[in-house]
Image (cartoon, rainbow over the protein chains, first blue to last red):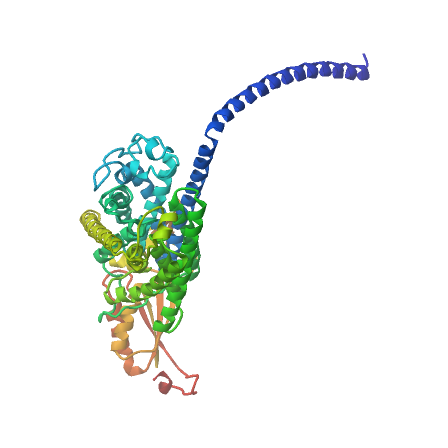
Length: 486
Length: 113
């Protein structure tokens, strides 16, 4: 046999083999496709029965999870705003605090926080399904169809884990607020421990009172996206932290006059401000926890408008009071407007949101100056933004709530002072007071326990040299010359 | 006229400045410097790898003074910078043959002021 005929016979044999393979595959494929078709057919028949319902669950879940991702992104905003407003020698430390706090909150909220906050229980705390989401639950069933121990959050029709993730990122936000006020002098380990306490106890208890069916909810207090639950809780804890720590070395002169300690990177601070603004578009509209087109659209606009007027009003106030439009004040003003609109965003008109933002923006400038006058050192304005405007936003519900909007957008029947009803205002006030008493007490105890066990503040030498070297043994800007003289 | 050069710990700058102000010395210039001290330096870590830092951050301060201000200046710097621990720094006193104020053209002890 010569080479050519050998080639031919090889090809012939190959052809036969391929034909067999082809037949085999085609038969298998045919059988497989029939099976697949039957399966899909039966599944889609089952879906077709409640197709509309499952589509709603899908859309709601998508919205909740995407909004939660936006809120998660706010942690970047906090990290860059805080480190931008602080000195370069402490940059690694501040970034670390903000980075680690989300992980700590995630853990704390999973271990016990969620259960305390949303588990069925008393007027003060949840008592069922406390640990690791172990309670019975048949989410996404809603209302009467819901059978489980997290009934306070059964009004939203998404799976349990979606609810958990959404609430988790809110918890992380509250914990990271504290890091701003204690920056540049708190020990890293002390802050980590305190954040754990925040996520596992302080935040969930207040959350239970207002969103978990506790006594404030029963009283009729409303806080749509968390001016009290998130921002003022973080604010009060930050206040006690700043008080326990004392001011940074060199912040106040011997006569008590405040000295400027300028931030080292205003570019980062601005970046962070934009990120926070973006994240708030998940924070507020996401709190509908449903893909409700009307509500989401209304809330996203009230949110944005309050941010805008807050920004402008703070700029004007700083321009008039201090002589120049300080960008730090502008940024604080934008954030103040956002915090203030967080509680009332679903209950007020767009025009009202403009007003709320404007008041918040002016208040934050005055608050910054006031805290300096009170000798309370707040490096980034966390107290002025979150505490003061968290309280203000909560009270705004009692002042500005429009009953028509509250019904259609927020799904609640409330009315503010300006619409003829003073009762809601006093309920909101009770909420502010109750939260203040609890968070101040609990956080003070926590800080005190940490102080006697781990120590709270770094040594003077370490504070002057910079916490990056002292706490982390590394520099943020290795190779750059930075002045460590302040 | 003398030029007093002092190498200081950066965190001591404010104390030294205040002490100099009390001694009626206001004109000075300050630069960043890296210095070798008798300390072993500190350990930095970068992603698990040890870095031994031998050149520590220091501050170099220069003050030009007339003869009768030399001792007060030295004493003020020592008062502000001394902590008693290793690394307090050093003061060098250099002879300054000429000094000119650029704005007015004054020379000598008048220019130092």
